[in-house]
Image (cartoon, rainbow, N blue to C red; front, top):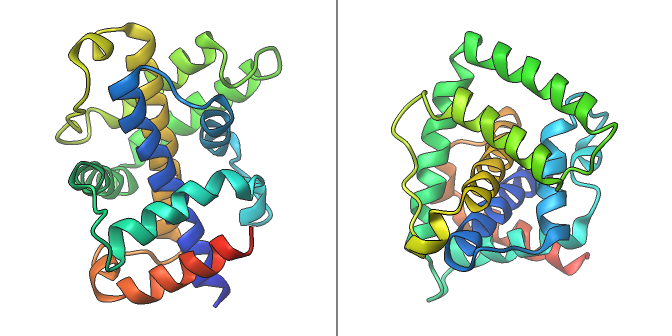
Length: 205
């Protein structure tokens, strides 16, 4: 049961980061606390347990709600969120098989950890650095995820950086989800179990 709980938590974090991407693309801004929680997951590379990666369970609440909406028998399904998730999981599979890309990413995250000794994770320079990691390592692995939103907003460099940084955070949680035994077919075959776990997790926080 613990594995299912942890796997559902990783999926919730993936969706929570993706939902922030959608919000920024439309409105140009996002909640700073939610963004910091998502980005912090990238730099936790040697956790003792899943709580080290996701210490703030209140922030994950939105992710659990997205699981319930997207996988449950509700009318609130968002096709755009599903499209982003499918695209991200496809890129994650390519990343997991590419040792060179994984090596570069590990090295860049090490540099990022050193930078965080002097700056907050939501600092503009840090966000730009995280965005560069996504552009250099992930973007070249396969078809790019096409982000929809306000065209004027999407032209802003700061917005582009936040979107790429959050996509890397979503990728980090998607990697964990797969490491915990997550597979795409489970999102169809075991929808009810995943939704029930999300509901239970949400009620605990």
